[in-house]
Length: 54
Image (cartoon, rainbow, N blue to C red; front, side):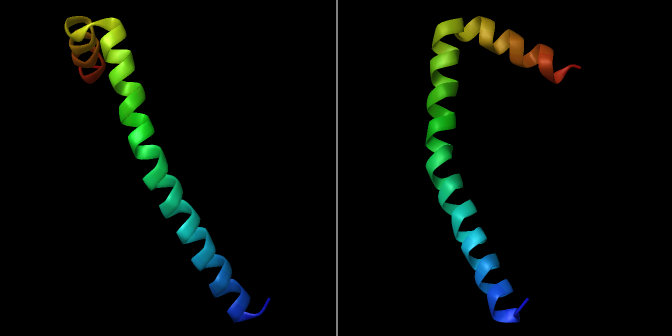
């Protein structure tokens, strides 16, 4: 495998991962907000505390 091909594949993979991270971060926060509103702030906070104590 040519070194130029390896470098180009690495660069494309890095760009792909960067773009996916930029796109998915707001989606993750949006879904988190929906779940917290569905459960209610008190229940969500209680569940977070319970998960951190394990």
